[in-house]
Length: 131
Ligand SMILES: [Zn+2]
Image 1 (tube, rainbow, N blue to C red):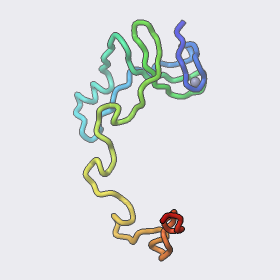
Image 2 (image 1 turned 30 degrees about the vertical axis):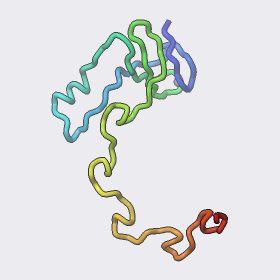
Image 3 (image 1 turned 60 degrees about the vertical axis):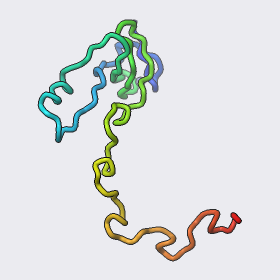
Image 4 (image 1 turned 45 degrees about the vertical axis):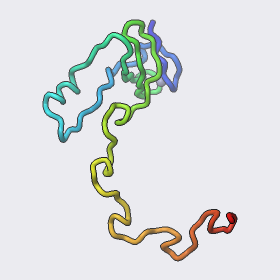
């Protein structure tokens, strides 16, 4: 019997889960070639050793769980944190894309806050607690 460690429910029988599959970084839909999409959808490494997988606890908490499983011994261990940096991809966001930051200043609007309203700035300097 294979026991899957659900972070919310504890160790449970693998029959309570659905194995979604290996975790594969998703390519950018706007720039991916058909070959990249085919590889993302259908090709897996199927390596011998530790593999990062997604499991769905369908008969428990109904959450998706990302775990590392050894494909020979079926041992489980927690997966490292996910994200673009973890996958070796550049960080996302307007700054990463070379775009200017968003906000009132970027839109040409005056800044908001106590200074904009003519009030003294908050903090220890404003209260005179520092020499
Ligand atoms: Zn669970």
